[in-house]
Length: 256
Image 1 (cartoon, rainbow, N blue to C red):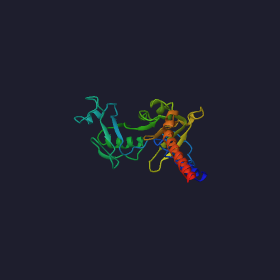
Image 2 (image 1 turned 90 degrees about the vertical axis):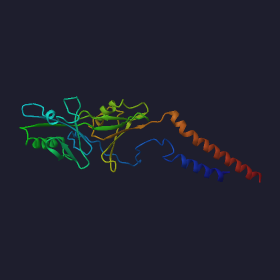
Image 3 (image 1 turned 60 degrees about the horizontal axis):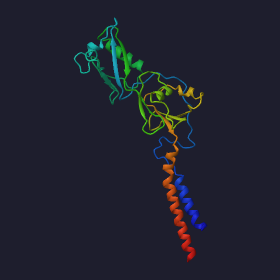
Image 4 (image 1 turned 90 degrees about the horizontal axis):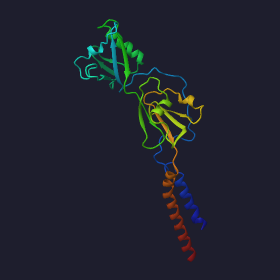
């Protein structure tokens, strides 16, 4: 009897202990020995223009007259004629095509450096122009702790924090682990993953982290008792079936 149960028990326990067995929808799992880097404490508001950014441009002459309306005259999306904002995409090669000055490379420049570059080029046509750039499609993705609750949050302010983005997404859900908030930053090929504990007041210091465009915020999910039973019941049924099979084999063996 013991010879039969031990292999069955090992088989079932091995299956149940598999990381993919329970809650296969859980994302961004890290190894148990993963060393999370310290949460950045410096405020970096110097955003760098990147490929696929959608830029808006406001251009003023030295007397304060807004020149972009004149420059865009007759173009689709003219600003000031129908209320739409004309956008300028940063293309695959890092360049942007503007009226009058043509195509220039802005990818890799800070916003201030990009504005200075534009001002110098427009200065060939206008006296002491003043340029103001905005990135219209800066955003972060927030998974607040429950399936179906993910949000794309637009970064309309230059120094939006982690806590503010979570609030914009509706806050951490009741099934979310406030003490297991992951912030994924950088290239998905080699991202930096920070672990933030918002359960305590001390953790609010890390929650004041200024976000960067394309950051991913993931609040780990705490399964409810109903979800746990839904996941466990099929495996319990399998274990019961295997146990019954073992008893049947044992009984037949004893009869022989």
